[in-house]
Length: 276
Image (cartoon, rainbow, N blue to C red; front, side, top):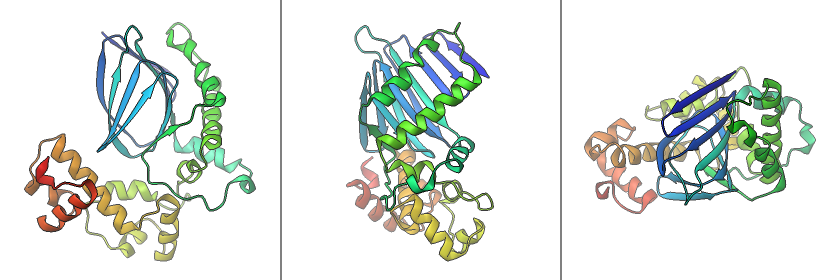
């Protein structure tokens, strides 16, 4: 199914998980927050991605993979006479599960270090270039791709990702087994709660040993450190973007006292929360 949305200076086309955006003004700012992985290609213009204290810049021809369940600030800019044109692919879990079920598991690289990066700027390569160039005709709303064509392009996108960076294997296929609750989904929804590791394991349908083993597949942090980092990231957003006060934020994100919060915040960001 195709959805078309046109708003004065913004044109966005959605073809079942493939999004094409075109801006005719100088700049657009948006908040990116999605429960699914996204592959983004910049056809023209410039895109700036702000991930807390990190800045990633994309120029025409650049491509980036954005991990699911993260909140980013994006600036989509025209550059000179070149309008902003971007294409993105959203990889839903059912597509990734189906892809994984048909893979030759012996070809999956062993002992890949799990990365905690949110945004991966990919090296330019012919596979990614040809994939996205084949989608550019669909910026014309009078030309619509078939469902089958879009599905094939999503599969092509998965292959291109796996061939570009082996660190993406454990990230793309981090879903839980069907009878288990998805770990990241549960933790992102409950990071502010005071739960023991035993409780989290139980709530997600695992023994404590299985929970620890599964968690290692999705992060190189311990569960406790992952939770602290998540709380600090959400505190950063509330302090900087929402203008909240420290005394209102630390309890809301799950810290029990302001001193612990301030110390942990300064350790992660290099400055105290009161400096924002």
